[in-house]
Length: 401
Image (tube, rainbow, N blue to C red; front, side, top):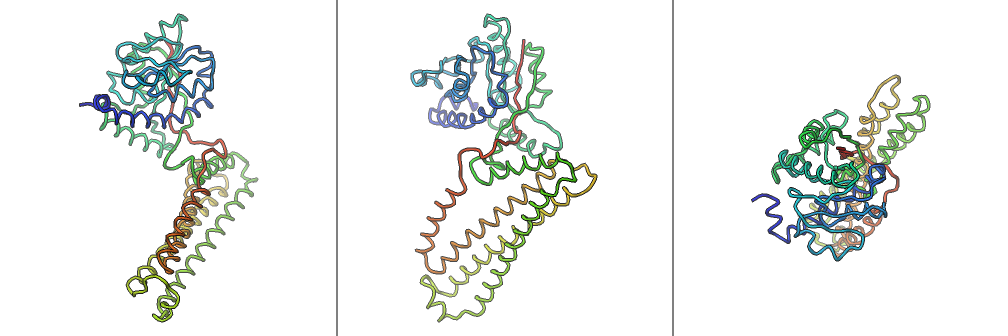
């Protein structure tokens, strides 16, 4: 049984799959912002395999004049037609026939099918845009395009992981430009254009956390710094020097606390502990508490040292005269320095909970609950602070007849 057959026969799994596809449609905001020209001049658009219509809804809100149709299998759109006033839902099979329109949208559809199936889908798309009465049309494909350039190593690695996932779960795969070109030519198209867009790096650059916002800003900061004259780079070096000083100071504090804990463990008496601690004071329990706290401070120390090391490296890269250093190299060093800094701070935060553990389980429990709420509030947001991003996915923008 194929993945798609299983999806058809299991309503609960089908609902979960459609919800996942809808959440991934958040990238449409970036596509509309960076590729508005793709949708301008269109009167009708069909979202082929559009699921619950999240993508089409975002497009119709940005372009109110555009009549959007969501085309998917009957069991997917069965209960959706009455829920939307803006969208038109049509049930059908993309291997049999596709409604005609000025443009057809295929978002993350082709990577789930073999080359043979993709050619069939594209041929049906070509037939649909040929019947729109205008004599011309286009197919907009949003999909992963593998790029083997060295400066995109991390992105290529992620795309290859998607490739393995597609091979295991479906009969599809991720493709490079040559693969897409072969599909287009076999389907009867004679020209195409690939446009890089800004997507989301969910693991490395989450857009709902302060760390994610900061990483985006750091990337943009490095790109701007690398464009200015090296003689005017003093301000950037001052910023990095401040980060080095802060990381070194906190590393020293963490090491000092480790020493104090060691001295406390060596000199504290049972009488002292019984008078101070309200929790379990057995020697074995106290040893666990001390060692846990010591590990937190040592981890914080290691992270701050690594943060300082990376910022020093960035300082060298930026201040080296007459050097052609790739921007990506500087970005990686700055991001690593910032990430180690954040991890070190979190180790110190966690150490506070363990420190309260010395005073019994109730203070520790209350502290844990309060800290979760506080740091969720401080470390979470839902809107971008700045409009920076990282190119992650590529859109086959226009496939014209």
